[in-house]
Length: 354
Image (cartoon, rainbow, N blue to C red; front, side, top):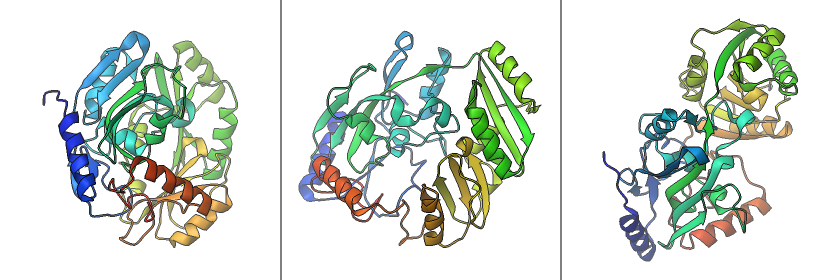
């Protein structure tokens, strides 16, 4: 499919919806349509608004329209030996750049390289009034004013329609290896945190089904030194565990029961909740497949200092994201009103009050 700039057409569609008070839901490839609260809203398709508009390998910066397939962007970066450092999940062949940033999801590399929002330099967007605006730029030292670009990351299209995103990229590691260990969940959490405090080239750490997996990335010399310290069993297809984890191809993440995404302090011991759990992000992220009462799940997670998201399997009346404190809710409502005064952009997708 050829590159195409549909900014004018998309802006006109949002302006018309604003004037009519018609809700809209921006959507690219629909690979993450399962995220968020279930709302029936007409779709504004960005699938045809695509193309890499700027790529400067020497400057480690790339810009792409929101409908650009994520796989196309990653393939382009790979030809120059570069990558998106936050290792975003696709969840389907239709994944796009705009959906990736709007959902703000990061993969196994996140604790060691940074989150999606850490690499967003600038955005072009359409606000709820149909105005085309630009925030940020294509350089790291662009810090004047409020960082709207990063605010858009994870906003799930409730604040604006993303047209274009500029991101920082990084060189691919010179060498990588994945090691496997026999650990209990509690031992895995202890080991992950101990290793994170040492000068080791960690780039991922997870635990499932009685085994821990650790990825080392960096120079060949640095990896050899780490191997001598850690031991473990080298995994032949070293990327296979991380692809399966990132794309939820593992059995515990594809069951019929609801899937919870639990963000907790990395040193948190295994949580006293029923169901099958996968530990990711070196202990800071727990995937839980469970039919436990949502209130009980959130209570246990909140007691540990974390928050819980009902990632898959939410019913029509279920709250997906962890409830906001009243003060935080009012802040979200004020930000929503500033960008989308008529409340037409994906209303109710994150919280019923937004």
